[in-house]
Image 1 (cartoon, one colour):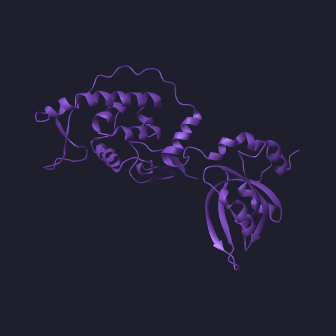
Image 2 (image 1 turned 90 degrees about the vertical axis):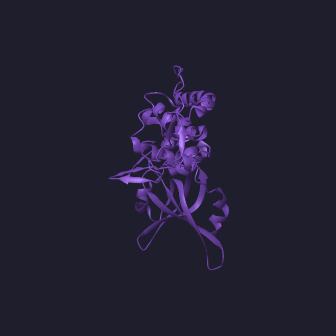
Image 3 (image 1 turned 180 degrees about the vertical axis):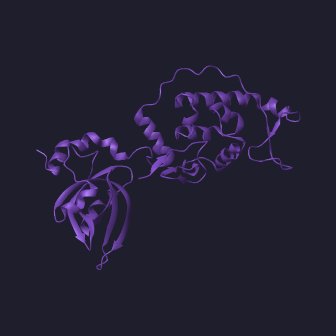
Length: 287
């Protein structure tokens, strides 16, 4: 029931934040983003929000690698002014090239009125200073179409470690439309029956039986609910090496209920994006 918002250079703190029914992903979640960049972005906002992408470039001394990570994570989308992410990347590269050529001249002028305090340093004596470089002339940005949907989602996973803007199973509507699967929220209606479910691996706990055989309790989710499964020793030996957070599963087994808790005892497991259509139809009981 929560809405999850992507990182944003004006709205994200370093850690995750929440308000009402919304959660904002923190800058800490962007893989590879340096601590210095996170601190500088938040400190720079003390002078007000960044009004545009160029305003961000002027006010915060970001490493080019950090800037590219912010763009790929979607953290600059709100200030893009209708420009695509490839266009923002082009502007960042142009800015860095121009600034690199002016860095020496700017440093020589640093003793005049060309020094500013590092963002967030305030007015304390001895606060670190940055050379104030002349804004490089900016050429018109060439046309660059937006990235296709799958590229944007792929970058999101690479930047954050997971898909945040949508449930990953929504990418598999076409194969799912051909399957007769039971939703996670409806498993309690099928106690004692063998069913087919689709799931995304969430977390698992390995335990040992009384005879010292490993087995695992695994939580999966579909777009309707989280549900619990049990991999007894035989199923665990067959499938434990196939469990991953990055692909969707088809799970078949028997629905059990114990003291009001409903679980799926897994008998077979396969990848939704791997099984041939004929096999999927056969497993689902679809003619």
